[in-house]
Structure formats: structure tokens, C-alpha cells
Length: 597
Image 1 (tube, rainbow, N blue to C red):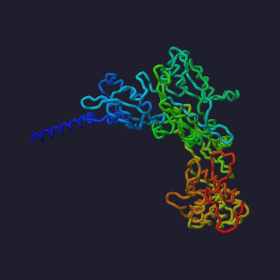
Image 2 (cartoon, rainbow, N blue to C red):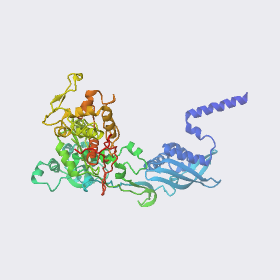
Image 3 (cartoon, rainbow, N blue to C red):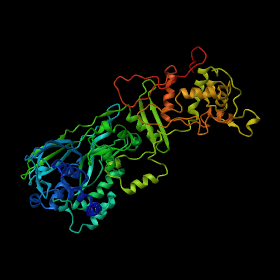
Image 4 (tube, helix red, strand yellow):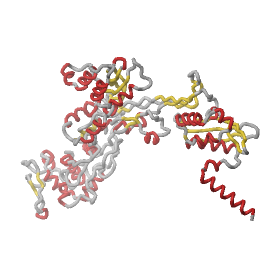
């Protein structure tokens, strides 16, 4: 009976201890030295620095108090971003120091080192004899662990002639020199904040930074570089120059040249080129081990995002021990910087600019493509936004204006699909000729301004803008853009043949291009081309037809390549050759060549 009582009491005590704290329970039993060391190392990654301190022997606790221990370890391990910490015991001989090897992932790569630890036995349990060398073998109490990052040079993006689309350039850095500011500068800071569209608090925070002295230049914001070559008339109309003149009227303001990433075409190519911004904590985690640091900038859209891995390269980083004199005592681990790659595109900046300016007042998309090589010479979405604003500092006010603009300047129109209208008519003609369902000289009836097939169409009629003399054949129908002719033609071709040929031309499938484009379609969610009226409307690019502009350009390449569509390409090569086989070429059911029109 007595024995049973003792067991019951023992169990009760065990439950109370477990409920009171798992840590205390973990170390109430006799442990090996290896287990104590393993528990200590596991607590590092969990950030349980207080529990680590409890594993130290009394002599070590006399050497370092708990607050200093926690601060020292936390600053080092979190500063180097230690993770995936593993410890392997090399030897554990009695009356000798325990030898072990530690490996961990850090901001500079994998860090591996061998070390040794001694233990004291107190109350039948092992405790770690700790000093700073437990962190790293050669680390002394007076040493510091430093992390140095070297940013990789981001690659430039060029057009086909070597003109810059995105890359290194000069900006104007607006800043303050404290010794030249007025004593009561509150009004000046408010004026500066208004002109730069920033907060006075952000300016004051920069001025209060620890490194700032009276003679320092304290950068506040960067602006576009004003060209020194502009004419007097251009200077009088330049908003940028007017702003800089106003800024220079404020005591203490200085404007100097600085290097940054620039986008020379601005809004003319913003939806194509895109922009970069500072990497977020989530993005940094996703790119762990790929050469990014908290200071990295990341392509967020356009070509900057598309070619991110090649443009960014890999930031360099080293973790090193600095001695009391400030000297580099030992490099623990390092990763060499790898600069990003330059990208040369097929884009022609002059053509890109010309097309944008031609449609800047519209909401439009334009594609220019070399039909023989597949080179994309221009990809335009209008209106655009100025991607330089994301580099120079996008204010909340400006961001809201962009998003509230009813013209949707941040909507990429060349990636979308649109009602093709008359642009589809030559393709319908080509399908009719290549399948033998339509003759080039075949007259489909008189050229009239309105038409319906029969009374089954009710009151619905197809109209066209022009009537003409002569036969209603393919040549005249193309010249006069005759809606009625192509409605009749597509009815003659038939729905099955038309859908078969559209599928062969890539409708409903992904476009083989670096930038993801929306698929072209001839049917909606209900499927098919619809009823006879909808089929007829499809003949002149209406009905349920939606075509991506790049896809349309690709289809047109078949007209100059014996019916073969050329694959579009965006990266420049010195010897460009057209690559056929994007989709099957226009197919003829009957033997014999297609007639050229």
C-alpha cells in the first residue's frame, strides 16, 4: 500500500511540473553532454535565448548576465539570419571537451565550422561552460560580428539599336544642407514637403539621422534630370525645371546629380518595360538563397519582372568578425557578387515612340512586327504612366490618381484581347481561299448598304459603310471593307470549317511569346460561334470574336510566308531568321496553290 502511494505522488508531481513549464521538465532528468548541446543549438533557431541561458553553468552566468547574453546572441544570430541550424557530434570522450560541427544557413550562404564545448556537472546534471567562442570559435568578448552586403549591378535593357529602355542614368537628388538652413525652418520644411509631395515628418526623420552633421548633404527625394541641352522655349515650358527653380529658393536646399535606374521612354513604353521597387519581406522569403537581401530591388512588372532573374544577378554578402580595433579579424562566410545580365530586345524606340504619340489621346493597343523574322518592333498600350515615378518615389496621392484615372493608364491593353473588326476580314478571305470554300473572283451579290439572309433573321440586318460598282468579289470587298460580303463569305465557309481553321491559327491556345498574352477566342462560355446571325457577324470581326493584338500580327505574317505563321520574338539576335511553326499554316483541303491577292 505504501509503495502505491509513493508512485501516485510521483506521478502527480510529474503532471504538475509538466503543466508548469515544459522547459523545466525537459532538464529535470540526467542528460548527456551531447543532448544539452543539441538542445542549446535548437533553441537558437527558435529564438529561445532565455532558455539557452538556463543551460549555462554558474561560472558562465557570473561571466555574463542574462540580459547581456540574450542581447549578444540575438543580435548575432538574427543579424546573420541564421536558420536550419544543425549540429553533429565529432567526439564525446570522457574528461575531454566535446567536439562538434555546426552548419547553418545565413544571409551570406551556408556557414560551417568546427568547435568544442566543455561542461560542468551540477546536481547530477550537465551545464554548458559558456563564453563568446561558443558562438564562433575565434570570437572574443570584445569582438563584433558584422554583415556586409554588396549590391549586384542590375543589368540594363536596350532596344535593338542599343538605346536604353531601362538602366543606369542620372537623376537630380534634392536634399538639404543643415548648416545652410534657417534656424526656424518649419515653414521651409513645409514648403519643401509640398513641392516634393512628401511629408514633413519624413524630411525631419532624415535630418535627425545619426550620421548627419552640419555640412552633410541629406537627400530627401530624387527628380528627373533636366536636360541642359533644351532650348529656351523648351525651358520655359518645362515643369521639371520650374519645380527645381522653386526648390532652390528654399534656404538649405541643394540639387545634385545622382545615379539611379531610369526609363528614358517613360509613359511611351511603361506598360512594356515596367518598373522596379524595394523587395518586400514576403518576396525576400520566397527568394531565399537566390542572392537577394533586404536592400534589393525587384522587377514588379513588364520586362523588369519578366527578366528579373537575369537582370538582378546575385548580391554579394560576407559575415565577418571585427576586432576591438575595428579591423577585419576573420571572414566567416562570403558570397561573391554576380552582376546582372544586359538584355537586348527587338524593340525600336523610335517606332515605339511614334506609335504611342499617334494614339496617346486614345485608349489603344498597337503592335509592330517584322513579318519575316518575327521581331517585335513595338508593343504599345495607351495611355501609359511614367514608370520613373516608381524609382523617384511614388506618393500616395500620385498612386491614387493613377488608380482613379478613368482612362486606366496602368491597364496593359496589348496583353488583352479585343473585338478585331475589319482587321479580321483578310483572314476570313484567306480561310475561304485556302479551304476552297470561296473563290477569289466569286461574286456574292450586289454591293448594297444593308442586307439580311432571309426572313428568319427578323428585323436584324447587316450594314456596311460603302457601296461600289462592279462585282462583289474578294478584291473589291477588301478595298471597300464590305461587311456584307464577309458575312456572306463566312456563311459560305461554314461554322465547322471556320472553327477548324481558327483553331489551326491559334485561337483558344496560348501565344508562344515571352510575355503572357490573353488567348484569342471566337466563342464565349456558352461555346461555339452561336446562331447563324452571330456566325455572319463573325465574318467581319464582330459576333463573339476577341483577338489579342500580337496574335493578329502573327496571323498576318502568313500572308508573306506562304501561309506559314512566324513565331514572335522579343530578344534581339544579330542573325534573325523567321521561325515558322507557331501554329499550322492556312490549310487547303483541295490540292493546288492558294491564289495571292
